[in-house]
Every structure is written in C-alpha cells, then in structure tokens.
Image (tube, rainbow, N blue to C red):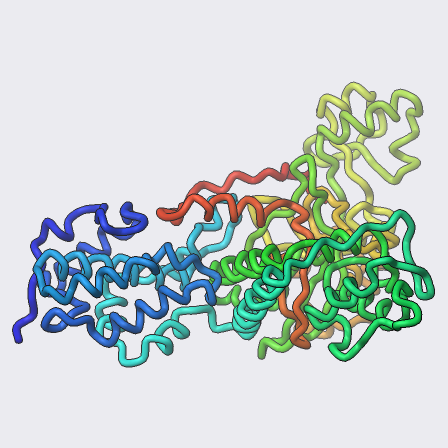
Length: 541
C-alpha cells in the first residue's frame, strides 16, 4: 500500500500537544528536515500498524531507566494509548503517533550519545559539540528501518568499558534500592565513640544485614547467638571493605562518619550512577579514552597506556570546595612540562598575605625564598609593602624544593589556569579527603609522572627527570612531541578495574547542580554557553 503522508502543519511546529514534554524546540529543525527529506511520508507505521522499529524503540523508552535516563522524557506511559488509537487508522492518530515517535527517537538517541545537558551550562569545557549527529539523516538512515533496535542503541552509546560497567552497576543498584525499600530497613543508630573489634554495638545484626546487602560482608555470615551485640572480626572486615569503597579511612572501625555513609539510602547511590553515566556521554574522542584522567571526588589520577589499559594510579590534591577554588571539569591536551618553575604570586595574595609581613619584617620575602621584580621581570632589591600590595612590583617565588609549585608543572593550557604540579606539602597525601589547593591538581609522584609523560621522547628517564627537578636549569620548558589527552573529571560513582563499585562524596555539589537541571525536564540546556571560570588566573596553585 502507498505510504500515508502527513500534512506539513503537523510537523512544522515546535510543540506537539500530546507529548509529555511538548516543547521540542531543540529538535524542531531536525524533525522538519526529516519529514521534508521523505516528502512527509509517515515513518513509523505501515497500513496503520507500528513498524518493528517503532515497537523496538517503544520498548527502549519504557526501559530507559536501565540507561540512567528518565522513561517519561520519552513518553513511556503514553505509548499504550497511542497504539490503541492506531487501531482506528485515523489520519490524526497516525500523524500524532508518527511525529511523537520521531521526536522521542531523536531525543533518546541524542541523550544517549552526547548527554542531555551541555557541560558548558556548568562552565565545564568539554567539546561535546564534536559528537553531535545530523539527527535527521541519522534517524532516516539508521533508525526508521532498524532491524535490531537494541544493537543500534548500543552503537550510539560511548564505546567504553568503564561506561558499560557503570551501566551494569546501575541496574544492580536499582534492584538493591528496591530490595532495601521493600524491606523497610531503618537507619543504623549512631555511636558517640568509635567501636573497634570486641566492642559492643546494639544493632550488630542490622549492621551485618546492611553490609551483606552490597556484598561487603559474606552472605553466610551470622551474628553470634551468645554475643548478639559484639562487633566481631567479620563485621570489622565488612566495615573496612565498605570504607574502602566509599572514600573513608579504611580502619575497620565503626564511627559516626561510617554510619552516616551506611545510612545513605541506595536510591541515592542510583542517582550517583546516573550522574556518572551522563558525564561519560559528554566525552568525545580522544577524551573518552584519555591517557590521563583525574577523578576529583576520588582524589586519584589514572594513567592509561596507548591501548587504554591502566598503567598506574596516584593520589592527587585538588581544589578546596569553597571560595571559588573548586577544580572545574574539562578536557584538554597536555603540551609541555616546566621543570623548576617560578611561582608568580597573584597581586591579591601579595596584598592580603605578603604585604602585612613585609611591614613587620622587611626581609620577610627573602627569608621565604621570594623575590620582587618590576613588570619586565627585572629583580628589585628596594621596595615597600605598599608597592607590593598595590601591584606596582610583582612577587615570585624562586624555584626549588620549597616552591609552592614544587619542582615540575604539567601544562595543558586552558582558560581556568589549572595544571598539575608537584608540591612541598607531601604530608597532605596521607589524608583521606584531599581538597586543599586553589584549583590546581597536585600530584603525589611528580617524578614518576614526568618520566611516564616523556617516555619515548629521547633519553628522558626517571634519572634524567630527577636531575632536571633537582639540579637542572630554572624554569626549563620541555615540549611534548606527542600531546596527551587529559580529562579532569567528576565521578562520585565509578566501577574500578576489579569490578568493585565505589562511591564518593559530592565535594563540589556538581552532582546536585546536574540533578537540579535534570529535575526540570526537557528541553534541557543542550546548546553551547560561554565558559565563565570561577578560578582566578594566577590564583590556582
């Protein structure tokens, strides 16, 4: 039978009244082009019956939560009535079904492929626009006659093992959250003093059940009938495993912080996994498989070989979660290193922190390894606190082991003035929570990282790197022959290399910001927006 055609006025609009979210202005031009290119022939029915592809997408919409999406964004609950309306084969029912299907297929494919919210909405610099499909062409060529809709859906998602593992973890935690809700489990009672092995905890049985729920304690473990309140070795081991997965001090003891974390409902963990999937979708090549990735809430840097296999991990210190020192999310290319760098002190820091010391002690800057220069970089030996505080003269810290930037900087130029560097404050790496910088990322093993970055570049090895850091010329720049993709990322839920699901605190409230936007429903802010850095140039060490 001849294909039915739609009236142009059914398509030439940015709103369709029977959609759950009728404003599809972000997709209006793509929908228009889609129908113009097919002379307004219907795409999703044959003789008034839904095509196999239409049925496949309806099933995908109704199970969108397994992908970390909201089913109602794609009219999940409305397809039953639309299918029923098709039985009368009326032109209006066919038209409404067809346009609704086109809009929702475009939304679904775009959301899965590049995320729902443009990262620039949060002033995060990730070139997500590089991923954008020509939706009219993509849907016409791939979706309308798709023989295997699930296979097509997988093909538009990030081709990343970490993404797929996060998606699998989401499904598991959705089931666990449902199990927890149905069981009606009450929060664990807190403690005034930390409980160690051999101590007493009145809710020992409930604690064991909570640990068993996520697999932190053996499923066949049981509380002693003779000592039902004893915090024994099994409970301690389970608590320690839980602490390791949640960014807590892994001492195996039960304290208030661990109990607060255990009392976070699993539906919250589901939301964290959803947020992580959204951010994975932002990453285009080559950043989907970067050579270096910092996960800010975890305080960890990972380095990957050219074949995407994990090479190393190391601790990092990132920006404080206050005073606009939060390290932003972005992706750039590492281009060069600077050995034995100067630290150029921002004028506001010189005014607030250095000028008062100069008033009390004119030799203060010299004693702290600082020097004063004019704006041409010429060192000045005569200066006043007022000249320094007003920026008439500039202050810089000489290179050396006590320099605030350490002995090497790793540069991937960006508008945030954020980079990686070593630090003299190595004691901070012993802490569990490590947000102490003004925005930059301080690395635990700078010499190892420099040797790794420079591998294959001449005779650079660990010995030569150590020489450059300790004995080499000051402010020595080494260009990388092969630039390396770097991602400064934010995952409060991730699956590690052993398949373990880890959760971390939302230290910068970036999850809360994302969820606030998503809670409003479509149309989401998908268009590019200007990047407005919170960090101040020169004030990001």
